[in-house]
Length: 201
Ligand code: ADP
Image 1 (cartoon, rainbow, N blue to C red):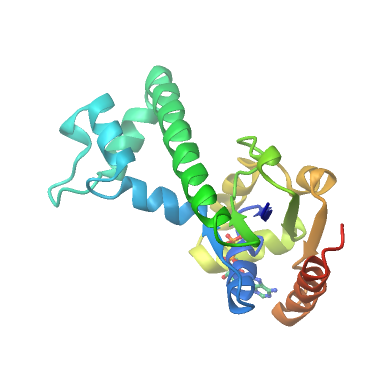
Image 2: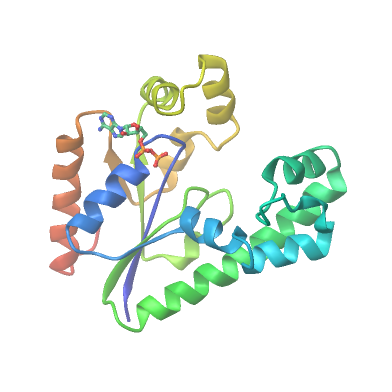
């Protein structure tokens, strides 16, 4: 049986940075955001399901999903919001399970980066969950810089998620990303070595 590690964190806590380091170390990582993106592309399963549910009004002139229209439809109406969330949740979960099973057939150890792992209850998919952690002030500072947000915009997005300190209590391994990327990479190396030796956390 493969060992599967869940990677999570909060917005701008450093997940992509760590995932890049994990890939460079030679491991496979399934990126949930990328999977969602693929599913929403023209012709993708989610694209088709959303059009079935909400009609062709949500398609832009170039044939891709009109995200602004979809957002407007969803956030103006509670029933639509629930319908969309349920639909997306089901299809994304199915696709992630499909990719997990495909990778499990050939890799003894691999990773899945799921930003909303706790919020959407993916805990029991994993042998271990690693949290990419930063303090809130660092998270805010990096999010403002990366996305060019004001502090209000950044704070709104951070507070919409489960606080990192709550996730910290639940995760098995904490990778502290408050320091330099190199300091983070060193922590990662320790954990990867441990896994390679088959040692428990
Ligand atoms: P996430 O994928 O969790 O949203 P990112 O990996 O994109 O977060 O990191 C958020 C931002 O902070 C990016 O611009 C990234 O380059 C930067 N960053 C990440 N880790 C560090 C670090 N240890 N030191 C300095 N900047 C960092």
